[in-house]
Length: 311
View 1 (cartoon, rainbow, N blue to C red):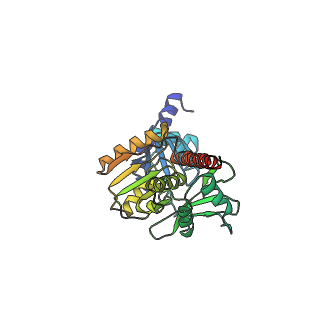
View 2: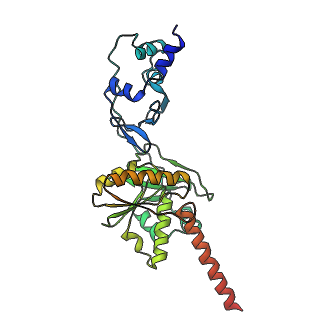
View 3: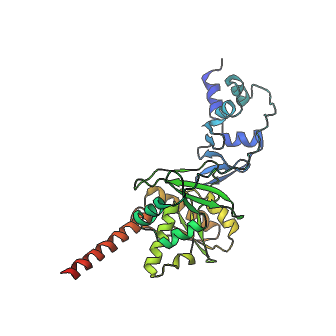
């Protein structure tokens, strides 16, 4: 048996150094974590111990767990390997990850629930919704949910997220096989500015607000928007690769602590890369809430005018 000191030595091994030495993997920092360049779904937290391999659905703490879980190595052999008791042996080949196959939900016939949810409940412009439906960027599935789709440079669907329509705070999830490098995009112009959001609904809501503010319902097509599907910059990095004319990044993340912390971190990162960076804060938690507040205000004003006319 091993003593506690030997086991702790194995358990506390730096997994970044371990993976670099054992497999020749290399890592880059992304969104406050380390991401493997050879296997993009393999991530290690900043503590350099906690890891998760998303495509395989496995994770753990440290190199000891990696040997036991990823290589199916017995505990005793894993401890010997990490403490140098066992002779170095060439590791089993870890196969390259296969390209993800996106599984899209089946499309419904007439998207009545989609229009009710986005246009009536959320207040999003009908013109925006119509355009995105025509481009297959949004649709209603057979279960009445709204599906938001991200495409690659060949116009092939590569990412999709689903949003429930039956409650104001509907459930959401990413479809199987989604590649977060290809975010939901509303990029229609050669503008140097790119507006960034945590969700597709925030992007659509801010686009609607801009149309109202400018009294021009087509104004949204003169600006570029991208949903990050959270606060990671995975989709942003890919978008900048394929849209080299972008020079300014406008971070429109949520007006809460996680959103603003992410916004400041990303601003510093991309300022160092030579981009102009700006923060655009919603008045409430997000731009969807801002739009709904404006719609309520407009409706209240219309009701007041109607009452005055009837007197």
